[in-house]
Length: 183
Image (cartoon, rainbow, N blue to C red; front, side, top):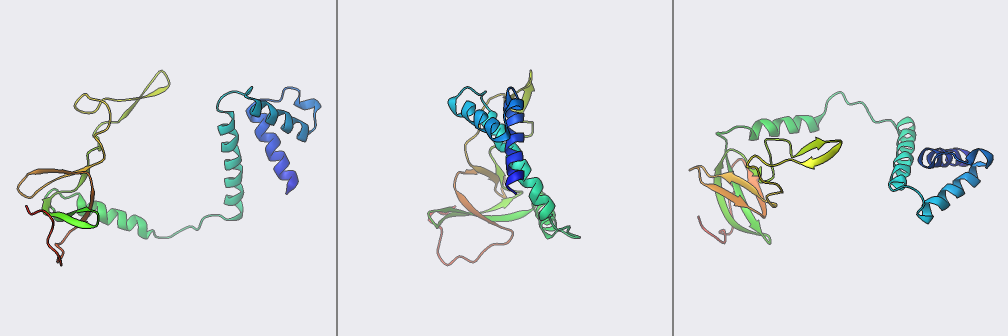
């Protein structure tokens, strides 16, 4: 096992730092030299991340070989996701949202359609230009996020935006206390 670890470290250091002068050194000397280069700041930016990625990949390959994932014949998670998608992808779906603040129900609404994030986008939020990933403008031509909120439409078409916690159900709940704010 120690031999495999030493070979792995030697592989990582060779891949990350090249093998200049390493041929004349034994594995531990080359590893120590490359470690010293890295720690002194003489190595290129990003080499530590590359080394960690290689070690992570080596570990993952070992785990895949010794503990392969089970092969399911059916996925309940996928079934649940499909059911949820079909449930909430109905523009005429009536549901009920309870807006929460510090554990209290602030308000309650009947809504039509689904709850959406204000940061959802119809177009890709990124573009690649000359190999670099840049932010794309939103549909309205502006850049940036819209904060952390959700929006929805009431059954009468009124737009509501909420930046807090909420509970969404597809049938009304029986409340033991009245909401803090009435509609």
